[in-house]
Image (cartoon, rainbow, N blue to C red; front, side, top):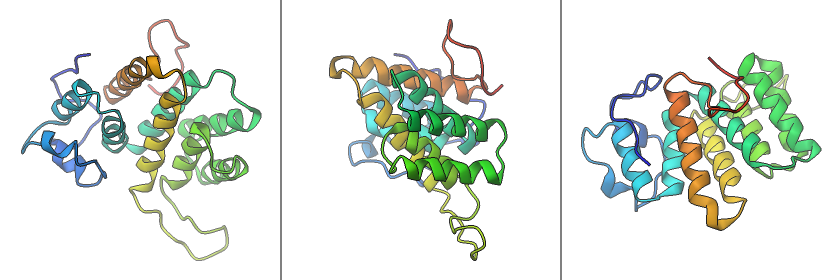
Length: 202
């Protein structure tokens, strides 16, 4: 697949190196990280090399956290064929926070992720919401601010769990579709593909 050459509208970083200074990428990805390489240029190299883990983690850190969490939601929603009750609850609460990101919705995502034993793509999408900002301490306790890297880490884990959970022979297709959704969101879209339910962030 080909990645666009023009800058992604919603990304503030001008270079891939700026994004990678926050992301924990593998040794295999480092040779691609040339000085002054654009985010879209670096992503294109990772996709061409089918470096799935690094491409997903890079996108999770590249997107603004709210858009990244929406991406995790969309990928989970379209890759979990029959979500269990707790998975569905995690997805619903994740989407509710994206639509209206307030403190009660953020904490409700932690509750359902904990109920799901922090297992699976939907739980990690909800956990990414809780990690996206604010205090990690229980209500009424002194604040413990979230490390800003935690939200993207949760997003990356969610997306990777979503796309690696199916048939291994179609993994690359699921990976490329997830990248297409992320690029759409990075350009102000809602992550749904043509013909899918047109709802989400505008």
